[in-house]
Length: 175
Image 1 (tube, helix red, strand yellow):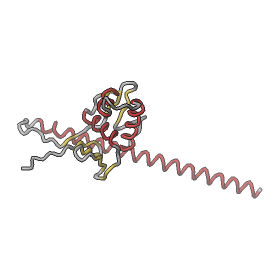
Image 2 (cartoon, helix red, strand yellow):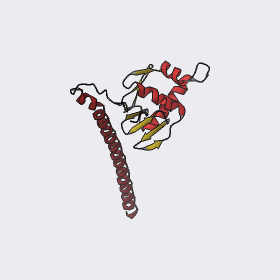
Image 3 (cartoon, helix red, strand yellow):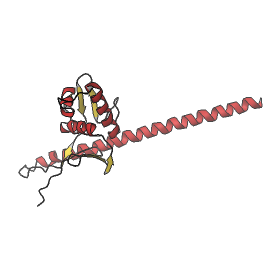
Image 4 (cartoon, one colour):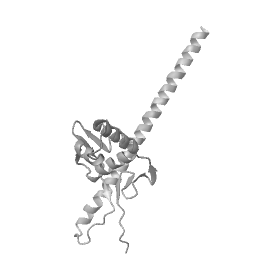
């Protein structure tokens, strides 16, 4: 029986390996600096809960550390969002709660096994995190597909406008 425990948190298509201090997306390493990594660990430790700016300060910087705290938190949040491919305005992962803090929105699962003594009726409940994670992955995939579609539409419209300008210019030159 293997008693070694890996400390991994999963959300969307990401895995946050706390022991190896790595963030993976679909099994591939994602670059993230140490402070933003600590922030992501803090946020995923309490998904759905408000993490105040003061809690972030205490977790990321020791009392003897002197930094511009406001700038430091803003930078760390920006780095976390970049690593996750997230945006501030319609975030899937990190929600800003103005003047208070941040909330991690995605459901987070861990490798901790369910208690063996739970009644059978609890089996459906135990599967709920996996269902939430699968739904979250689909939502993320749909959002990315929509962004690609919108980008392709903009390129197509720009190409059509450019072609129209060229045609009009050629027609004007012939007159």
